[in-house]
Every structure is written in C-alpha cells, then in structure tokens.
Amino acid sequence: MLARHRAKDDPSNANTSTPDGKRSWFSLGYKEGFNQWWANLSPAQTEHRVLSFVPHLQKPPTHTQTGSAPPSLKGSTTDVNGQIVDGDNVVDTRRSKEAAPVRTSSLNDPWGPRQWHSKLVPLDNSEPNKGKGRFLNEFSVERMGEETTNSLVMLHGYGAGLGFFYKNFDALSRRPHWKLYALDLLGMGRSSRPPFRINAKDREGKVREAENWFVDALEEWRIKRGIDKMTLLGHSLGGYMAVCYALKYPGHLNKLILASPVGFPEDPYAVSEALPEPTDGTVQNEVLQSSNETTAATSNAKPPPRRLPKWVSTLWDANFSPFTFVRLAGPLGPRLVSGWTTRRFGHLPPEEAQALHDYSYSLFRQRGSGEYALTYVLAPGAFARSPLIRRIQGVGRQFLEPKPTPTPDNAASSPPSTQTPTTTSASPQTASPRETGIPVVFIYGDHDWMDPAGGRASLEKIAAEKHKALLNATTREKALENGDARVEIVKNAGHHVYLDGWEEFNQLMEREMQDVEKRQRRLEGAKGE
Image 1 (spheres, rainbow, N blue to C red):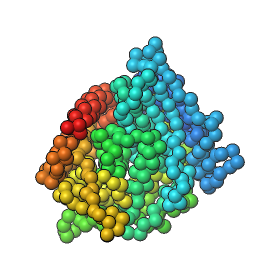
Image 2: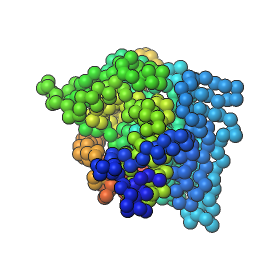
Image 3: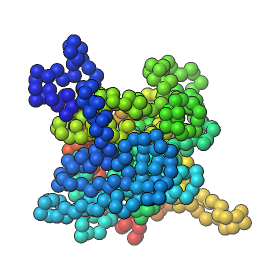
Image 4: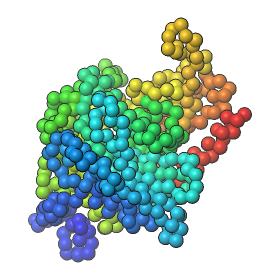
C-alpha cells in the first residue's frame, strides 16, 4: 500500500512527512520502493489487476504477448520460437500467449451477455520506413447476440495506457449495437515499442513525421478491424492525435470527442524555436537508438520570456523523457512515481489507487519509444509546435482522400465544381467529393490544467469553416450537413476528466453515443431523398 493509505488506517503514521516534520513530495518509503522495484511486476500483471476492478469482470482476459518480460538492454532480434525481441518489449506471437475472450452472462452481468477480449493486433511491417515489430494492444467489449453497427474507439494520453479507462468500460459498453475498443498508442502502454526515429531535416517535416507515426498505426488498425466509420475519443495527447487522424484520413469518423486535449493554444516559442536534431541529447544513448510546419510566429515581435526554468527547457529540447528519470533511478523509481500517483489517484479507493500506481510504474520503466515523439509535437509547457487551433477548422471538411500529412486542404472554400485531374492531364476531370462536417465535442474538467479557452476558440473556427462550406455546397451537401461543435465541463474533475469525474463523464458519453445514432438515422433519410 502507498504510505497515504496506511495513514488512513493508522492516524499516528505521518502520511507524507519526513521524521523532522517536513512534508515529503513522495508518499512511498525507501523500503517499499525497493521492494516494488525488486518485485519487478510486469505491465501484463499490472494491467490485469487494474482491469479486475471493472464491474462484472473479476477475471479479465489478458494476453501475454507483450509486457510479460522484465526490462533489458537487448537489441532487436527474432528467435526461433516466434518471439520478436525489441529492447524491453518482447512480442511473442505464439498462440499459447494469446488470451481467450471472457464472456459474462445475464446471470452475473445485468448488462450481459457481453464478451471482453484482450488482443495484440499486428500492423503492416512490410514498409522499411515504418519499422518492424509494430503491434497495437487492444481491449474490446461487445454485446453478444446482436449486430454491431457502431464502434467507439478510445485513445489514452501521454505515457499512459488503456487501463486508465477502467472506470468507463462497463458503462460505455452497455449500449445495444455498439462495440468498444480501447487502444494503447504505438510505442506506449503494452503496444510494441519499436525505435522512434525522425528522418526529416526541416522543422515542418519533423512535426508531421512524428504525427504520422501514431495516426498511420491507427489507420492500419482500423483497416485490420474492418471498421468503416467510428466514434473516436482521445484524451490529452490521444486527443491531439485524434485530430491529426481526422485531418489525414477523412471520411472515417462519425464523431470526434476530445477529452482535455493538448495542443490547441498557441505560444510564440512553440511555433518558432528549433526542434532537436537526431544526435542531440542523452536519451538516445540511454536506449541505443536514434531519434532523428515551418510556422511563423504571429508577429515579428520578440517572444516573451520563458515561463519555465531553463533546465526544464534544456532537458526537454534534448529529448530527455520524464520516464528516463524513472528508468535511471533503479530502486528509487517507484518512490519517484509515487509522488505523481498519490496526487493523481488520491480520490480513488485505496486498492484501486495502488493498482494504478503499480500499473503506471510498470509502464514508465519500459523501454522508451513513442514517448520521444513528444518533443517534436510539443514545446516545453505543453504548447504545440504546430497548434491545432490553426488546423481544427479542417476536421470534417476535407476532400475524401488520404493526405500525406495531417493538414487542412481548404475543401470548404472550394466551389462544388472544383475539378481535380486524374491520372494524366489529357484525362477527363472529375469533381472531388468532400466531407460534409462531423460533430466535435470538447470535454474539460472544472479544475483542469488544460485551458478550455482552446476548445472555445475552436468553436469559432469550426463555425466559420461551416459557413464557408455551406456557401459553396451543393443541394445534396447541404442535406448531408452534419458539422457542429461544443464544449462540455465536468464538475469536480481535473485533467483526467474520464477518471476524476467518471460518473458524469460516462453519462455525457452515453448522450453522445445516442446522438450518433440519431444523426445516422437523419443522414440515412437524407441520402434516400
């Protein structure tokens, strides 16, 4: 148990105070931290424990294809037993490591029968520039005995994992004809952790390459799963990548839900300062790997002084991940993590808070991979290198074709008769179909450190783009118009709004899922006219 929990049972136990009476930043004692480090619980074990708190799922399915091996410094190899060894992350493709689905019946599950499944989904590993050993960790829930007509896909934030949504899985999988998927982003959680490399030399190229690294994996997963359209929910960094996905792969979303998304506000430093070079920093030496929109500032004025200490900016720009400290700390790692987990999960029941602490530490200490994309996407202070406020207007307003990068293509400003050449200049020219809007919902906690002003400013950009699109729309496009946006605030919740205010959040999500169905019926009627 964390020291904070022992203090509840023994009031004489000084919760977070040192023997001299001074307050400590870390609730876990040195001995407890050493014991946890020595126990070396794997991510598979800790994810399983967290998911055991999902109502009606005391024995969750847990594949052991990843996250079952202790950290190591091995290079990437493939052994004769089908194991792809990638540093700390071992991807074991043998069938014996797969997990069988768990089915709950209407006798032990009032919302059943439901099927719960944990699976490792292989991605396309044939393209050399994308790297090998790419797999996404997936947790899914579906109702049995009925056709699935809608999919809800959930993406976690920076350094987290799909287990953080454990308070939402039961409630969000109750709705008939919906299937819920929670994914670990590539290079995070229990997804595979291939080396993260940036090959671009220019500033915009580095940003776009980092974004593509995540959203291309999501698109490959969607194709593997045979999902035409989905409702996409992203938290924090997952919200940022959800916006990028909507821009690069238009036509595959019914709704975009952004829970305390990062990357919307604009900061002069974030859009003008240089990005790290592939050879900069000490992180690369730690893991023995390389990490290789020119956006002008809003004015020529000198940017204001930095608000963060210089040492923070220096480490950030050197691509020194916060989790590097945990890995280098050895036996002190659990104690360092406890400073965050105690404050982050203090409102939860002790057993759940302990399980999330163990889960967090087991993920933080794994070999670095996707976490190194952060410095290319965000500047110190969590401001985006390429702010989403400059791009959000393109969501739901793109030409219906994949893009090389997550950038708006100004489809809304193009008249319906816009012609695009086909294979040759001599070929007949055909009109490019375009999206007719999708609903976008921003959700923040009422004491969220992420400023809701970014979401509110986005509403204006989205409304202006909708106005342009309707001015240039055909009669059919007007009939199929489906775009709008709004901001929701969850009471008594911080940045992890889905966990802090999970009951209100789940109710809000239930209404959003109902709204998707209502819109689908309306659009089907419009198509038939």
